[in-house]
Image (cartoon, rainbow, N blue to C red; front, top):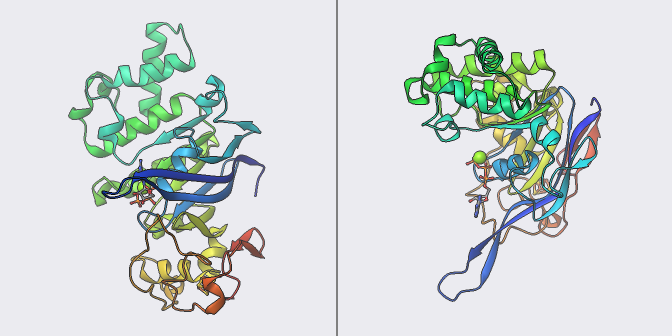
Length: 320
Ligand SMILES: Nc1ncnc2c1ncn2[C@@H]1O[C@H](COP(=O)(O)OP(=O)(O)OP(=O)(O)O)[C@@H](O)[C@H]1O
Ligand code: SF4
Ligand SMILES: [Mg+2]
């Protein structure tokens, strides 16, 4: 992997929830001791079933949420200590699933982009600002007329293009893109993904790309991290993970993924039943209650990630 740009170290995020009528507090262990490194100018996909903790980890790595414990280092700087420094705040951006909730409906696109531009360059003159905003729209293939429109006058895809333009206005080095196309019409998803991939290449940005669609993950990501119930089950270069899959959970995801080339769907593993609660997650291997290959020791032994190939790690010591 190229030099790590961002390192998450032993991140835990436990959300307190009220315990029924009796009272007291329990904790949802949304992220439970996760470490992840993201190299400069690489795309790392974060995949896993709904509720596995992807958004929570993404928001923590973007500096939006505090972890319960652990730390995130950006070029060695702890992004959660003493508030996020301006310089670091600009270098880390997030693109959300739904542009409707991330773009202020009462602001014109010029003002939305202008806010980011002046954040990066306070005191910039009005005409320069308009020029910068126009360039940003060009980068995301939008006509300059859009500067004077409100978000509701734009289509979903156009709004997400504006969200991407706003993110790059601050010249970030790292973007967390949380399912950036899943709220959009299927017909335009590929365009937006291709746009994101082009921007990533041209600007040399590292992206944590949170996704469900494994076909896109295969197309654009350099690395994949597979999450299940708050833990990473497998991590590695995308090609390695897809071709030499190292964890039964990954195999279940691949075998049920639509639109993937047949060679990656060779596994016929299906997970058993439903995911257990994150309040009392299973001891031992997190996946053991649903793993078709589980053995006795899987119930007791806490499975650590082990290296099975170059940069390729799995939390299952048995499958391969
Ligand atoms: N603010 C919160 N308070 C309590 N629990 C929360 C909170 N935010 C998330 N959770 C819980 O944490 C777990 C992980 O949620 P998260 O949104 O990170 O999952 P996800 O992998 O992004 O899922 P999806 O694919 O559906 O987006 C879930 O059980 C969720 O209900
Ligand atoms: S450690 Fe055991 S339960 Fe977990 S994935 Fe491997 S075989 Fe399945
Ligand atoms: Mg999510």
